[in-house]
Structure formats: structure tokens, C-alpha cells
Length: 322
Image: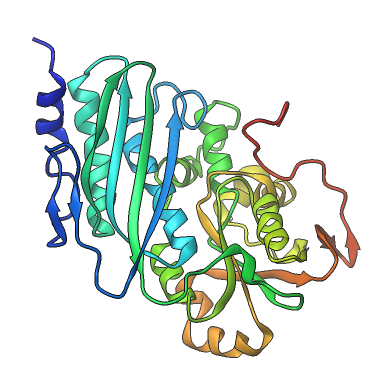
């Protein structure tokens, strides 16, 4: 007998994620009742993942569950907020118990890691589509895209471009057997930089999560701050696996324009640089300086002192072509 909606929720989602004392009422009623800490403000984000757009058909269900939560955690990380609760709307072509068990496991493992609990949602029948809303809280000022000023140093966490290569491997468009596992993992199971985002509130002037490509997202942050940006081509961080898989030139191109990294791009005032580098050592926290915000609008990539001509800035859902 196929699972009913009630059975599906009871079996896979009632106790999904961490246990939190601030959940007065969670999964099982018409709505959740949550207790926000006194003196803190609520921070909310929502993202939708659609099969064939955000993940490939046949993608491991654990990856779909992980990524559905990770993309939202990354948004809260960019604000410097602490995640707490999640809501899940899951549209399924059928109630496949093996797929559901794997999906719930991928979601729950990442939720527990970041002390997030699933408190409600909805299930329905239709083409495979996952929507997650994340709720968190913050005390004091949040990180925004709009706080940067000309002269601020520009940084990025991690090694952007790995996920794009991982996607190419999944699509059969890249052959790199020695590096395949690492690069695939970077696409299938991205690491949201929640801890880094939380501590950057004391140092960064502006921040954005890198989901649609470093070049495009750095441009969004710079524009929101009323600035432009210079990015140093030679400074772009590239993983050894990516460089070995596609070569150093293509690796830097993917570092600039590949999507699905879920890293943080942030700016820091000149007067706060020494404090940042001393108190948050880059070798421990995994970030790299890549350029500087400037007064002139737009983003230019500078190589050997000369601006480069680039034709692709990042992913746009409603663009005619990519």
C-alpha cells in the first residue's frame, strides 16, 4: 500500500534535524510555534530546487536533501545570522520510500550539524521540486550587501569553481578520474560557511553568498554598495584538484563564473584588515583576498596589470542563454 501524506511525514520528517528547546510546537499541526530569543531579530530566507534546473535527474537523493538546506544556510551565513528552524515543501512524482529515506537522511545530517530542526512544511504530488525556508536570528547588526565603500579589500572563502567542475563530471562533460570524487562532492554536498559568516559580523563591511558565480555575485554586492570592484586574476584561489582536472587557465575561469559554490564574498575596511588577519587567520578560516572595491561602477578582472575581456559573469535563471 502506498504511503499516505500523513505516513510520509511521520516516518521521514517528524524528528528531522536537531532537537531544540525553542520549538514550542513543531511538525504535526497546522503551523509551528517558535520562541525567538529575547533581544534578537528573526532572519528568514527561502530557496527552491527544481529537478533538471538545480540538480540533475537521477541525482542522489541525499545530495538533494543536503543541497536544499545548504543553499538556505548559505543565505543566512551571508547575513551573519544563526540558523535555527526550517520549513520544507516537497513535491514528489511518487512516494518512493527508498528515495525519501535517503533525502531525509541528507537533509537531517546537515541540519543537525548546524543545530537546525525541521518544524513543518507540506508534501504534494507533481514534478520533483524542493522548497526550503530557513529561519534564524541575530543580535545586533546584520551583514548586508550594501555596506562596502571604495578602498575596502575584497575577499572570498574557499575555492570557487570546484562545484562547476563537479557538475560537469556529473553531466559527463569532463573526464578527471583522479580528481572526480573531490570535485563531485563539492557539487553534490556543498559546505555552507555558517561559522565564518557569524564571526565576520565583527569585521566585514559587506557580504554576499556566492551561488551564481563569483564574478556576478561580487558585482551584485559592489553595486548594492554603490561601488565597483577590481579582481586580481592571479589572486583567485584555485584548488589543486580543479587545476589538475582542467588546467590553470580554465580553473580560474570556473573560479570566476562557475555557480553552486555557496562560498562567501565579503569586503573589509582598510582599518580593519590587520585585526581580521590576526584574529581570523586566513589559513584557519579559509579565505583569500582577491581585490578591492572602487568608486567606478562595474567589475573588472585585472591580469598582469591589464583589464581582461570576459563574456560570461555567472548564472541567470531568466537569461536567454548562459
